[in-house]
Length: 350
Ligand code: AMP
Image (tube, rainbow, N blue to C red; front, side, top):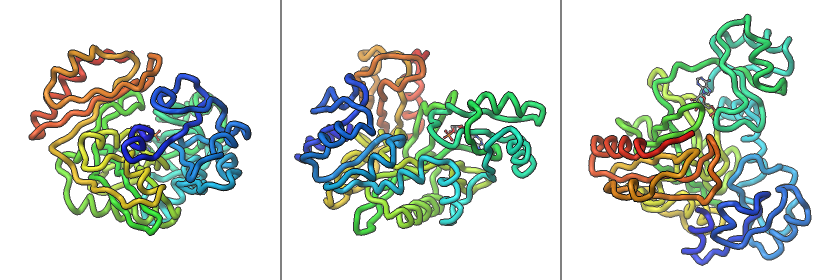
């Protein structure tokens, strides 16, 4: 989707991905190789003006080793987002409250962490977790060993379980001169740790909540000297916001912006990293995004729904894999919800 946005702006993209059949390889020139393969990276950067990433587990050292073109967002932002302890420490340092947390390095420190954090709690691997993988909810101190085994006995973080009202996220674009443009807060619905549906703007969004979230995005952007698009995933609890995690990249909860906003998150990311003016972040209508997971849907059935736009990433189907998404536009929230139900009825995820 970044490559497609680049095409319109006359920005030629070359991608690097370990998979030969990556989505990006289907829409532009692609190098197949590991993210830290020096030869592949040398090829990638040879004619580049700027290097970026849209996957947060790209090795930081490989990005630091790039010489010549600018690497944006800065690798230090990638580093902060790769470690859940660094991430939550950053949140609290810039004034974004986070669930109470403690580091866990072994079974002994898990017991100590439970005393500090309380129960119920969520044990998550510090690194490489995504879509709910590498996580275990801990409800009883008799089940410490099970939880420790469930996360693979690797360095982890124990977080207080937040009985949130809903999950929100804010997607922000930050330019090199510090200008920040934020899309409206989005309400996200997960199942089995995987994002299923996003509503934009979040229902009953108040100016006050949006201003709060933008303030947090501004503080994080400034601290990281960020350039590009990033997302902060938030819990809305007790009327306030708690930081869950940040993504140093374009984000799934911002995919609706392709049809639903004045400028897509993909275009704004490219504008930011290429030193072009940022585009407007206004929303058209009421918008939702429904992820296509596990199995391809019947395109005709989806496309007969008014206001529906189907995006298929050309990936091999696999249980739990995000294969595409559907953007839905509607004139009012009730119609939007009806259309989301219609789309969901055509998705048989596995
Ligand atoms: P994460 O990979 O950290 O985004 O977690 C995946 C999902 O698990 C989140 O979107 C929440 O639905 C849930 N979750 C994560 N952390 C917590 C928490 N501390 N309290 C309650 N639910 C959580």
